Image 1 (tube, rainbow, N blue to C red):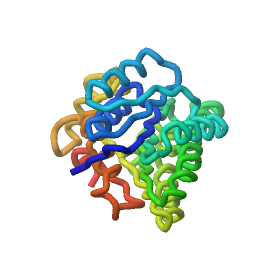
Image 2 (image 1 turned 90 degrees about the horizontal axis):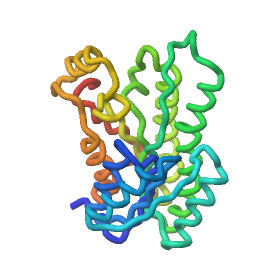
Image 3 (image 1 turned 120 degrees about the horizontal axis):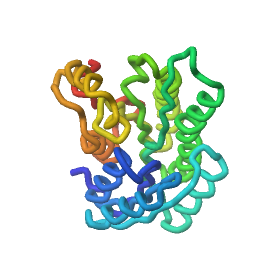
Length: 248
């Protein structure tokens, strides 16, 4: 079950956090994993070491997902080298949190170019190859705040809401070509991004979660693995909420 042997997966933002957990989980299932990173080569190398320790192989690949040309060149290169790209996990993203009245134009532009643009450009390049083989999996990492909103995250929540619309649209566009497009919406997850939050904020978030704990990167990675697998072949356009019941 959830076997990915012989398949090639690209995980954007795979050097740490949820991205690293996804890389390792896909590797354990047998996939060859391409670890995209933006700048932290040391972290990407460590992820690759863990991928190999998990029993598979892969490589690190630095490119700017906000650049359409960079995405196309990188993904074309993957297919040329490996002969295929079966799974794309659009995980990379940024959060520049501000209340609305303090939001600067450059913060909006940067967030949308990475979170939305990066997902769109990578998906465009990947789907072009996937549809020729009439099979493929695209999995987008959105967020609970894309559906619920969150004070202080006007721009971030807008970008994550956009990914839900993008996911559903691409699912409709490419289902007939054998490509499924789904999203995973994490709730309150224990990552580098949340580690620096005040203890009261963490406690309040846990109190609002019926399962009574923060999620882990592995919780998210497990959901991604399911959507990447053959077992999810009849699932497309779906937003899989992994939030401990915080939103039902």
